[in-house]
Amino acid sequence: MLAGAARLDITPTDAVWMDGMIRTHISEGVHDPLYARALVLANDAGLAEAMVIVSIDVCALDAPLVETIRQAAAARSGLAPQQIILAATHTHSGPATVGYFNPRAEEYLPRLIDRLAQVVADAAAALHPAAVGIAVGREETVSHYRRLQADDGHVVMNWEPFPPERIVGPLGVPDPAVLVLHVVERDDPRTTIATLFNHAGHPNVLSGENYLLSADYPGRAAELIEQQLGGLALFINGAQGSVDIDGLRDRDWEGRERIGQALAAAVLHTVAGITPSPDLALRCTSINYQLPRRIITEAEWSWAQEILAQTGGTVQPLADGVGDDYLAVLYRDLRARQYETIPVEQIACALGDSAFVTFPGEVYTEIGLRLKELSPFPHTGFFGLTNGSIGYIPTRTAIQEGGYAEDTRCTDAAAEEIVLEHSLAALTALRQT
Image 1 (cartoon, rainbow, N blue to C red):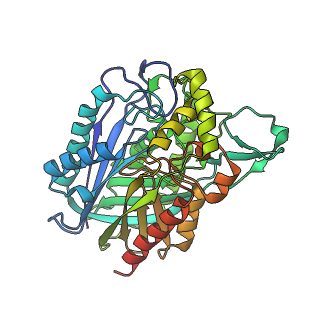
Image 2: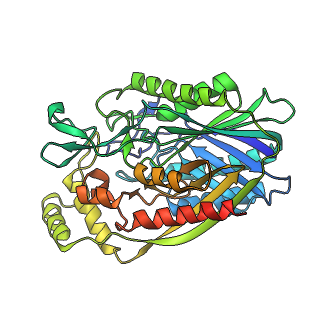
Image 3: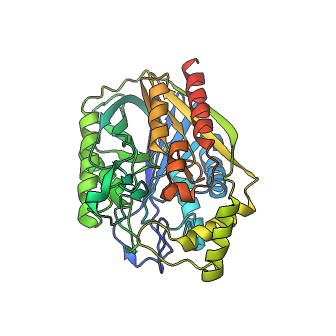
């Protein structure tokens, strides 16, 4: 096994619009730097059997931007575009690389593209003999199931102020698993090259009232891991569509510190039990398919038209979540494209008895847990928000119950089964190689 790692600062040099929340204006400064961290794993120096994973401190990357970055990175590194996995950490305090709720930070994108292409090239150029070990730990305080049932039956999000005595309980459970891939020098196992950690969470400690750029708690966790172990630490998000931080506490910089420390501690504890091996071989496969779009019903469209008549299509800022004004605009846009399909690319990779599969969106935690249960590998990671951003993939049950992501999803309810089926097929194909 060969490995190479590199890190570059991707912090905007000027004020920019920020992604993740509906904000009133552009950023006001930088709380902590944003980074792109790349890890290349290869079976030999020829790069034909190699894969690069890039952890990027942004909220998301859409498909056209991913394609541009992959082409640029391929031209500089010698890797093929399909060998490049671009994973957004999903910080809600990063530049607007998609423009979910506010204008996209167009002026920042050329710098981002250049830096990501370069960090992939730098990591590929650093390839040298390595040993790799994988284990799964647990962290049970960072993520909480965010969909709560009220006593009248409706769904309350865990960030919404609501009388606690009226909450029956959460409608699901979080995924506490922390998949850790520890890469060390082959000839000096005490020297860390990189530590990749995969955990399902929502990095939105800071609400939409924050105007300082930040990598949020994954950035702090990565920093602490790097200080302790050396090398680079790459956070890769999981199936986090239905989990969040505790929405009514820790919504400040002290909260970011506490949560970052908790996640870092879980990773370090897991690393302590790993014995890296130089003999693991990398195996990868990819699949491409289409998901059906959500059909906006006549009732939904009638409602949206009434709201649009009142708002004129303008959207007011909110610290968390979205209002009816945003939903009306979304329904209008979805209705215009509702008979189109959504292309999906997934990459699955295996190292020994462990594997991971990517997905370009925010899959509900229930789906990720089900995939891990059915996976033919003892240890399976789900890498969400990778190589695209198609929004939430809720379960059918959740869609019937309602809630924030159910209202804002772009895919049909059948997406749950389709994603699970294709993810499992990719993992099964790997297991049989």
